[in-house]
Length: 616
Image 1 (spheres, one colour):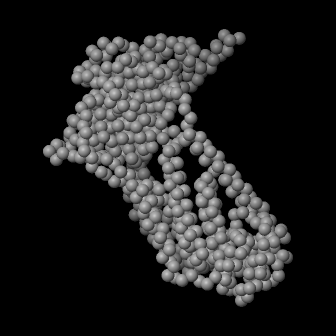
Image 2 (cartoon, rainbow, N blue to C red; image 1 turned 180 degrees about the vertical axis):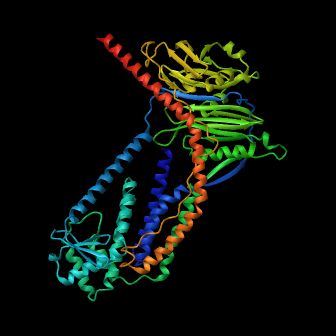
Image 3 (cartoon, rainbow, N blue to C red; image 1 turned 120 degrees about the vertical axis):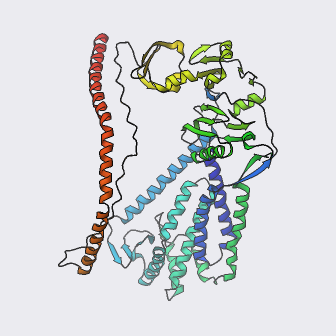
């Protein structure tokens, strides 16, 4: 969300920059067509340039620390934190409401236009569609459709009007109008975009006036027509109106001498301002610790940060960096994001010959805290901002025997234990350690490698619903009422004392679906067929003989290409046969599973029927 706001602010600033440049340097010049492209380019530059970021690295002095945190992959989750106003959320809601309201207004304008055009008689002339309406509306054009009321003007006045609107249509000015409206919807909060839109529309009128007067003999009569049109101000909002900007400005521009070509240098003045913008806002500086040439890469100290706004591509680059620099595999998984595309959950697995392996996790209803991945003294340490601060303040210490000294509730494999039990545990047997904060109470949950292997190899059902290993690890063993382990089918069924999904022990358990087979090869892909030639109109005898002759040649080429594909099609058919063969056992298991499901459905009907009888 924060990244979106920064982007909108940067884009709004660039829109203001281009408008100010146009207003003070180009507004009074007669380079109308050049001004049109300058204004459009300004809009697109405003939305694209903030997305381009240059990364600059600076070398700083190394400051290594000797805290060994690598043996304990830590998960930090925070729940029920103190309430505070989320201004980002409130701003996002206001911004979204504004967009919705302006979109509704935009849709209403289209509806108004459709009301004017619907059911009218259209006269086609060359590339233009003319509609002579009886309604009291100012003349306008929408793409190649020109609407006017001929009864309100003389023949010479009407000719002036149509020449003007033809310019709008020929040069596709409607596209400029729609683009300016779209930017007004996206940046409705920025006052400069509304002035920008007005500048675009006025410049389009200058272009149409300038081009129309080149085809009209009496320039003075054209100006009188402009004045007469001011009495008809009933305009359709999303069209090019004959009367749209101040008539005085248009008449001034019509009589103004052409600007000198040497004044074109003014367009280049915006470039230095854009360069300044890039240097100030689009260069991201990253501090990199100074390397010691006498120390190998395996022991260099490097700290990198993962924050809530990281994209999947940025995470991938971090993993590639650690692989390249330290030959350490970083794998980011279990990534969860909120509606603002902020990361709310993530798991970081690391593995390397020199570093051992481990897992760090952070999950919360809010965005994650900054994660520090540190390569310190030849070891990988991963912490979040909160735990890192506690380490620095000596609130959490790691002793030489690698035990964690902190006053918390401790669980090993889901069972609550004492500090002494934790101290007796061999650190090499630890698969994962989670540090959780819940309702101002903190707890440590440790999973041993042996227990982790057991839960990984089995399917887990808690109160009749399939659960993942994380749900099992978070389950307090003191709440377990019954546990059944089916070693043959590798299934663990757990029923808790406060079960909510299973009301009694008579409720039938659903069958477990079969596991799809692991294919030895990828699913076959059919070869790409050539495109068949299009059949000409008519028939070969009475139709276009030349076209039919070309069609016959194309068909010969098509048949030749299809013949070349026959070996590929035979290979594809063999692959499909092999694929079907490998799928046969699974299909049979699915048939057996369907039969078990039918039995389960009957058992559930009987179970529900018995419950209904008991309730009566």
